[in-house]
Length: 382
Ligand SMILES: Cc1cc2nc3c(=O)[nH]c(=O)nc-3n(C[C@H](O)[C@H](O)[C@H](O)COP(=O)(O)OP(=O)(O)OC[C@H]3O[C@@H](n4cnc5c(N)ncnc54)[C@H](O)[C@@H]3O)c2cc1C
Image 1 (cartoon, rainbow, N blue to C red):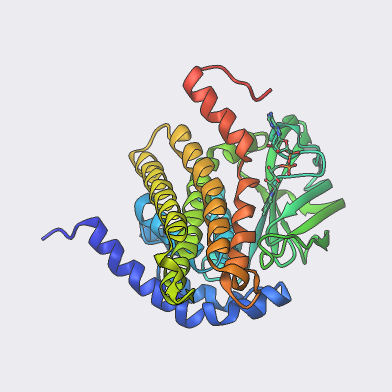
Image 2: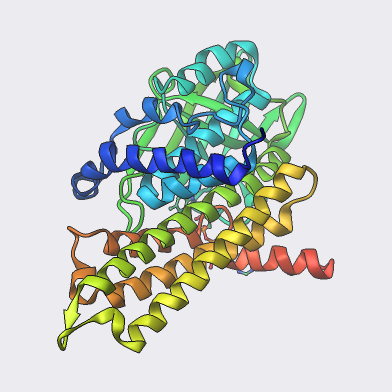
């Protein structure tokens, strides 16, 4: 008998929810206060497919499809947006190393990442280069058997804690005249400066600025071919947009669940506040938005699973889900009254963290322009 996908997902979702509730949730308040992250939870999460689960089994993965992956991201977002964000970065590095890495790079970087023995960050954004990835200024000059890196990377998730960074740099060598390439930079072997940045959102993701001043890396740390990074970076964005969209759906669902519970149990004027029509309106608006965002996210997952062009579906899902999750969190704050502002209670964190989805992986404005370009066949981005 074939088990329908929804039933399989429901079983896995249930065991993930129980695991997170027991092993991750009890530590969140402390880590949020300390702006730290419990990396020790990652090895166990690999059992659910969270670390490299989409890779083929032969390469250490679980052959997961995009629909299952979308569900995993939703559950991670339901638990803690900082967790989902770090999983996204880790899996982005895993995917790039798997697709482009040499056997030696896979042994030194991919395998330890899969075992959570090392951790990685991804450096694209710079002080003068955000939405316009083509404007990257960091440079890598080939000098004999090594490259010399100069430049800065900004807003780098896990930058504070990563053992190595995968960075994009404009490359100068006999075979490359300033096109973008990917490089692996090991923090210990090729020290670069790390400055931790505190942000309103996603406080437990080790956001940092990385500075490279004549940092030498061996030639064999070039990831993929020289000058090929632009298409490689952009090609990964659709999957990353699905991740962030489904994480936002999970966070919004959590805010909704807490609000429904609170509306049933909190009494004012001698009645549960859920019996007031205006509170019911908030709950219904939240529910409609969460359902719509999930449907768009799953549509994007289907499009990616089919293969081929999924840009429009992924951008619509990212645009709608991240904006909507923050609206839902805002309504949840309202339903909770003063309690919503308490840092001992999840709503204020969900409110802050859902704001964090509208900027990375292409801002709301950039998603809007991508969708407009897909519909009209004309670009308004530049
Ligand atoms: C939580 C978080 C985590 C991040 N993690 C990473 C990471 O791990 N690695 C990494 O490399 N980067 C990371 N980033 C950086 C992120 O990718 C950039 O912040 C993002 O690409 C936007 O760039 P910017 O902040 O420089 O804004 P800008 O590009 O300067 O944009 C400023 C404003 O102008 C708008 N804008 C820009 N261009 C256009 C246009 N053509 N038309 C209309 N409006 C436009 C934008 O939408 C925005 O509203 C992270 C950011 C955040 C917030």
